[in-house]
Length: 74
Image (cartoon, rainbow, N blue to C red; front, side, top):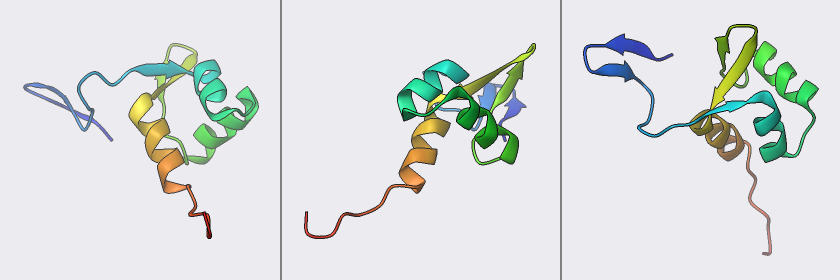
């Protein structure tokens, strides 16, 4: 989890965008409900902004990278 330090937020990459649930769903080509389930289960880290969630672009990339598979014979 990112923590506030003297220089700003640590644990966050410079230029890292915050995406809405709709943007994450479009990127992953899944439904909004799937993204909400991933957030609720803790599989996809998210920030609460008012009543809405925001997901760091790097967290989406990391989630997809960790779940990628190697295709044999390709």
